[in-house]
Image 1 (cartoon, rainbow, N blue to C red):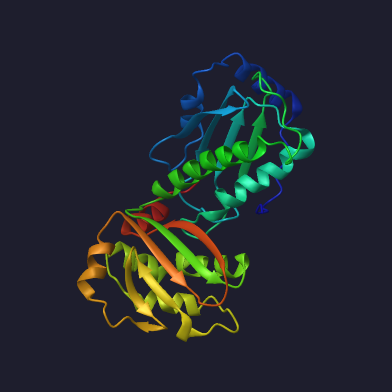
Image 2: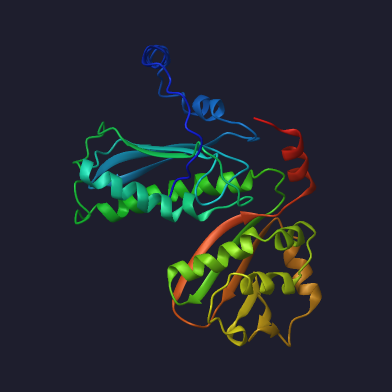
Length: 294
């Protein structure tokens, strides 16, 4: 999904063409990093990923760049993402592929739950490799290609979360045993977007009440709280809707003090599972957005 925004006056075509011609003069195989740096706004580092994949004994390349640090939510907001591969992907197929990649990567992240107007994710297939074109999902090479594209997309999207405005922690939120994918994501984002949960992460406070309250605030109409369990990394902190009898506070403090934390929530009502990636909410986030104006 893409956000909508203010309609702006179109750029005159002669200015656009002049810019394209000037940019073409600087085309280079080594300019990926320069391009990644050129699109940065409040980012603190450029984001670029490249990897080679063997498809049918042919070596192909997948390279991508992204920018985004704040105003990041699954509608992609101020995010820009570009992934290019030199294998030819059929025109009827590439539109499906770009959605599959986005849904497994860029549409699974949030920094602050806010959105903006200039979100873009572009998948480019140049066809410059010697590999045979991939025209259908029935092609035996398709799954390997998709997995590699998703891997690059996840590395880029997670890099945006790690570089989130004022972020001090990288947080994985997995909701399992949900009725369906939509329900799992609804709960995961309710936790990921909660200011109380995010500030607890920043404070390294294992406040299980805030997390459980956010699960309840997801407004799943028939959620049975007595079936909900919660883990911080591998530590079971809540069981059957209440504090786990064996849980000790110092275990939670040890997990929450880490730079990377996994929150796992079981709803006990199905077999669907989804994961999103997010950050804490720090003093620096407030300062950046109080002082910054585009």
